[in-house]
Length: 361
Image 1 (cartoon, rainbow, N blue to C red):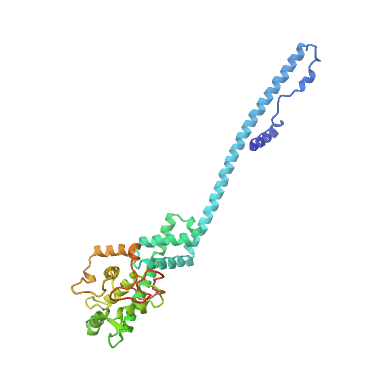
Image 2 (image 1 turned 45 degrees about the horizontal axis):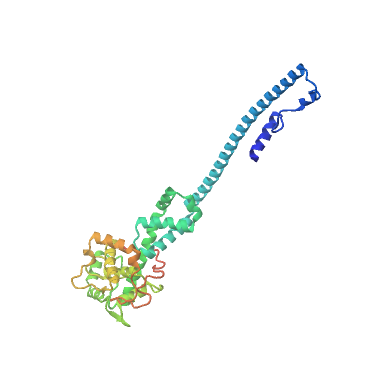
């Protein structure tokens, strides 16, 4: 109502009339005194003045309507301009934030560190889908302003940008654990029981090492008691994750698989392929879940005999929270009686392993 009144006042001021004018009654002064009859010329003159006033008012109303329509049009244009201005500001802010994403190496490095740390706690060998989802989640939780400025294209473009470094970081973390397992094996057995081998040795030298009786004995003794009623394998795992309060069954299965495949005389080479490692992990993980001995039994299938379909089932099972959280307490061979082994709680990552030997290469 106030807006309409303002428009009417504005329009009236333009046409030179007072706002909301009514027909003038000044002609009343020209009427005759009560009780007398007006003359005919006077009546005609009065009617003419009234008609002129009505025309003047009609013209004024027409002008006012046109002016009000113009004002409405200007208001709409002003609203549109204001919206466009807000959109421009948002776009400029988005450009600024996206420029930060593309040009700030610290942002990419921070995201990569957070993603690999989070993923590695629950999935040693994450898929590309796992990494994409975790990257988006990290940005949403840790960088909400940037997340609001990104659409699906930006997320896809950013992931492509960091994908290579993400995989390198993960391989470094995986390789770091593998190196620590192998180092612990040599430390626990000692050179008298297990001869050293240079990881850069020729295939012939590696085959000779694998054929050494001491290597075969070390492989057979992995699940035999070493000291204090603990097996060699328990001591090795404890040495690898000495800084961790808890170690998950997934990590136990992985660590044991590395030791088994590294010393197994039937496995050629000492660099373990990812596919073979996943297969052996699957075997170990299921044994741990069912509280069965990890030591291979007579006639038991080796990792290299498992199928690709079984390997894919293991990967799905490994990611299942239900499967990951059913373990607890002691299992058979290795007994894993240490309070740090056999539980799913706490940080189970292998610590800072960047730059170490890469598994599968």
